[in-house]
Length: 339
Image 1: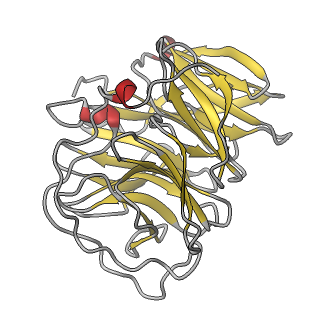
Image 2: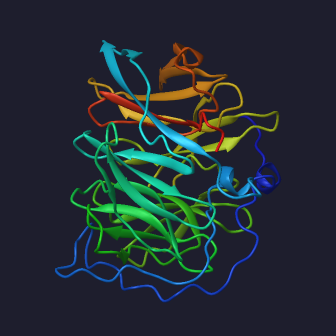
């Protein structure tokens, strides 16, 4: 295992300069992934700041980025990418895509220099639906829940620092808290949603794992982690990154019990973002982008090139997501208009 940085490695990824007391949170749902019978009001309040590390580096506000969607075709475990289409195609910030369970649309974070909300789009964004509408607060990191029938995201209270994991109805309007251990930046649920892993915004940016409904205590599985925190597709474990001392990032895996993390592989080049998906044989696969080249691998096979993204006239790719059926990929890249 390579040596790693802790706080010093992430010092340049400032995650919010000021904070104030958060607004009162609603009570947590009664069980894993449960939806209330009646909708609770959407939160509202004062100013907010996006906790995304890449965004906080932008002193003038959230960067102009768009979400591109492309079809994927497969020969065995070897993918090929089709034409990339700028799905969001508007000035401003559109980021953090996550496909719906049926793969026919995707959730994402959208906003400007003031705040962010959660939206859902069809694959070409001809149908665009606003999920949250909180002019003075912020939501980000939307993901369908592993138990199904609900949506999760980070809700940042007015004037708050970071946020808490919230659950909502798939179409919004039923927001309520799923945790109370914040401030957090990113998160992952286990399969039955009884346990939660979070990127904690404490000084040393620890990965914390805990039981949501049992007094089992909080386990710190690692410190100084990067922003790319995901549950494995079967939601039995957690993938996360740690930075190398000499640059770049490595992907590690731990259980939802916070067991000692194991190094799985190094990400290519200096990238810190990746996507994880499941191949037909049950193997976990991964995508990443290095110097504008889309690359893929499995846990036991090395990286190999899939496509030169310059051919598609996009650059600055950061986040990636793959639909559950592996038929589409989403890439976040610079707004071509430079907005």
